[in-house]
Figure 1 (cartoon, rainbow, N blue to C red):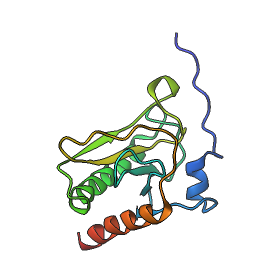
Figure 2 (cartoon, helix red, strand yellow):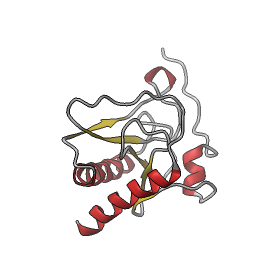
Figure 3 (cartoon, one colour):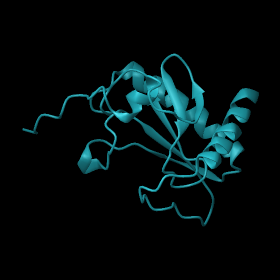
Length: 146
């Protein structure tokens, strides 16, 4: 039998963004989801999509919430292709520490990709805010035109 997973912590960093307690470079929002720039991007245009309803990860999220998240992931992925002249897109989602999860609020990474360009390592270094703001604007322009 597997060990019990920890309960959802509603004081995590993504909840703080949702509550307006921490800033984020938002690129898309609807009544169920929020998409914003990853502050430690592995490539230019690296974005995150989260549900507005709290859940730890794929193991406890309501099916309707993950459906809404994936709908937004598709919108953001399509926008990433255009906004960053990408040749592909990597979609990543991690669950629990052993699965690579660091922030325990369900989230999906959307990373524009270019042939022959490797992802930057996850060093913990934060990107320049002005760069993230400019990249967020690229996303918003494409999404507004869609």
